Length: 361
Image 1 (cartoon, rainbow, N blue to C red):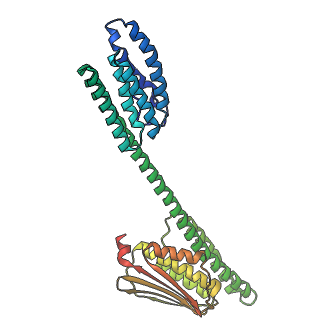
Image 2 (cartoon, rainbow, N blue to C red):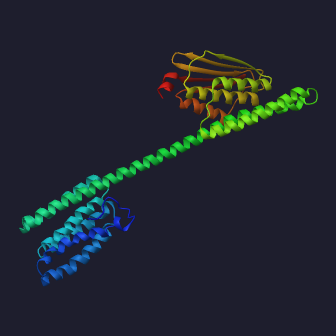
Image 3 (tube, rainbow, N blue to C red):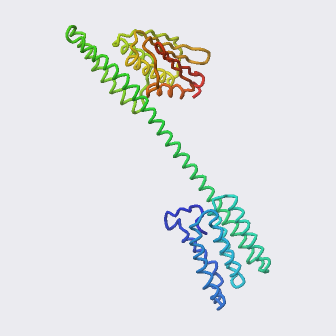
């Protein structure tokens, strides 16, 4: 019958045309005897009518197929008194039930087709030669087409779901790269800016130290390039040791002292990386905007939570979260934690992350 499992025609073999070969059943009696004039007259009407109904009907979907199915049943009723093999039209009607995407409606349509065809055969007294093959082929063909359509619908839904997951993964990766690029470049450029300004002030009265600062700028720029490349490939892992060392260097260049308190809690790599990046962004903001003299970073444990606090004695009064603070919040919330920012006289950033949840993930 018609290829009910693929209503989107992609090639000749996926179209309704190959299944027209089953029309041979209609002409089968003529293999053994010559057709009568009545049979020829009926055939001249039935076959063209069938071709129009079938070829147009297989382009429809859902409930729009029902009128064409009913028309094929009518052809069966008209043709059966002259050609018992007209029951092949009912088999095509059963196959077209597969074009109904609503599973319940498709099954009930098939049941109605079988009942009407069998009941008509019994009413006319055609017996097993008509009723038996018709019911068997209608049930098998219609059931297979309906099952095929439902399978294809589920497969398409699965593909759509997979595409959605892939799109979400791409979006998440873009956001990760954006956060990391902001954190990496923001920190590094701030350090370079501070050291450049310092080198400019020292170049006249302390050339030796100015030269040292310029060498540090060169080294920092090369490290930043390596960090950017690693960040893009997603292979960069930031450790607390390296990040605190970088923070101390940046703060020192801006004449800000650092007090670092760490209870030496064992952290999963994903959490250590997130905490390191939060510290980097916070220190970058302090160097850029705070006008502070002191900065304190504390990493402690409280129950099953990791607590991180970063505090400075600068001007405070943060009124709006920029990309950096939003990125910090997103990192912490992605690990099931929360971030608070208090900014009056100085700024205090507090984060709490459930260690158990991080380890399980």
